[in-house]
Length: 120
Image (cartoon, rainbow, N blue to C red):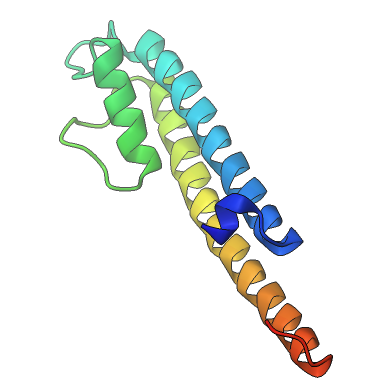
């Protein structure tokens, strides 16, 4: 709750980073879903035939959990698949780095408060 309230500048910074990551991922999810649908829907043997299939497949790729649908057949959609995997790894690394920076800053804030005799 302290992060949501933005209790300190460090909490606000983490909240803003998480918000940016979530919004970026949602935009990538929607744009990639539309692109994959247009590139893949008329391919022979594809399992991505409508927007529901496309958004399900793209979302599972971004979550790095994969799906029950087979990978795309068309070259364009396969290139998007590779980009989605790179984005997913980058987002996870960015999120981990954001939390690491938050804990580091909070530790420094508490050390500074303790050195000044205040409560942390």
